Image (cartoon, rainbow, N blue to C red; front, side, top):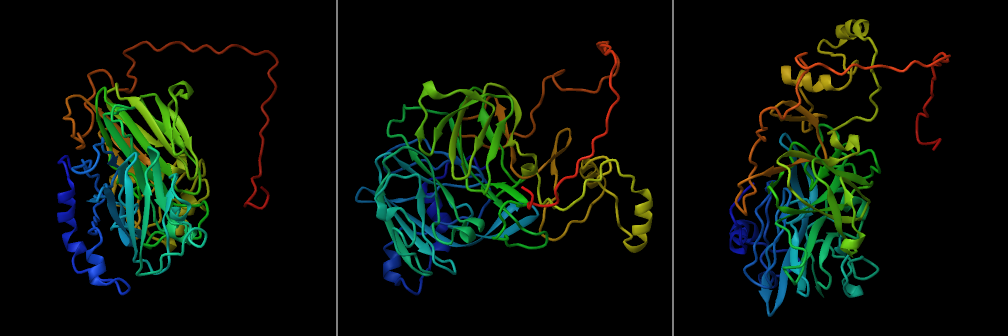
Length: 469
């Protein structure tokens, strides 16, 4: 992570080349020059928080593998410029996807405003089809709600629309199209919106993270998602990044931490944190009163929901943070692979090797052998895809993918230091180890059961598809 403080001026410098010379066929150069400058970034790194230098003060968020969009002040109104366009997103090192996003990335940049701000959003459409933007969870005039055909005309290719409203309610929200949603959201068109408290002393935290849950079905060797997939996705991502491409969440010991998570996939996700208990302090409907909260280590986030989780990071270490659906911590997983546990394949390998010389038997003892073999040899992969289980830690293969990252709690970090500190150095004697017989193991005694009935083998036939559900 870049620990330097990035301000609006830095972002405008970054956008200079991208914003220069832009002229859409339906918008004159003079008209475009009057709009807020187009700020764009294609980096997949986590940017440092964007500290405001105009408008009301607030404590900024950190967008995991993303950034916040700068604005300009115009007679007391915060003006932003979003551009819907095709983008290239690195899912993880070794794989890129051709998606749709905003301002060079998918998801688009995070929008940060303060409760009571009047906001003016310029939205330019560079997609090949019409679009709109719905400001998910916002209280605003009906004509600004962004549902094409219902509350507004669609934004045609090459056109720029203006939305204007007051950010009335503090909280964690999203923005996404309400036009050809199946295509546009499957292609990655979405972003986060944060409305900060006007009172900075209300529910303060030391570190505030945000990311969106999204998913793609991209065949190995291809670059574009299959937009008609309903549930059988093979890439489960946070902010369009899959482990090991997801950055860690770096915090100081005893920091109060808030993690804001929005779900724009097609299924729910039980998000689980190791080593700490948290409380759900906010939803996209508002902030939860203290009397209504309870401790959790896992919270289920349904489709279209936002959740804000808060805890004190009082345990040092590298703690896993992940979706608890096991298939969602895998990459590029085929769904038609048979279970080969316990199946001896020696004779089969000999026969197939005559036709396919490099054939290897897999799955007899489980899938961990895939990561073991990958460590021993350079296993070839199809073009533009990721290993199903990947990632390496200080003790070997992590065997994860998809929606997986780490909360790294350290002592002595500077206030704005978000750099990856590397693996945690465990105190001596605090790591699980192989039993060597030096300590006497407890004796295990099994109680005797009289007249124990003989075991019965049960064979179950599973339905082969969804037709019998």
